[in-house]
Image (cartoon, rainbow, N blue to C red; front, top):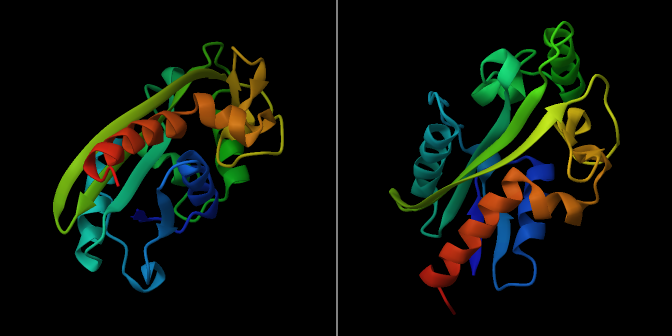
Length: 196
């Protein structure tokens, strides 16, 4: 079974494809995605944004589409950056710029608890068929560590492993990450939805 991911983020596509390995599911980018004007993300939660994207992009194919919205919630920042995680330092911000600003915002904070959140929504031709949410708890480091992953991974310390997400292998991260948990729930749904 093929599902189309409504994202051009190569790192995200790689993680979702890895999560789907070993089953009959193939995750591909939505055909013609670059030519489709993106929807405006107006939601105040990850779930709202993922739903908006899934329903919007489901108009462009008869196949099942999957959209996600994910980011970082930091307790000392009252849950920020939240839905603005990818653009904390501005609309076109690079990962290193977002990381630098986050460290600056937390420079006087002792409380560094945080969580990654991922909302995943599956839709088909304007109908939402499935929603789920995955979370993983951790802490924000005072400096980046590791070179794997993307986004805030170098700053996100996962205590059970004693390493940042950017120091984990892809398999290790997938087992415990917010996206891995959300994708596992999606795969269970898809087995029921299309068992063959």
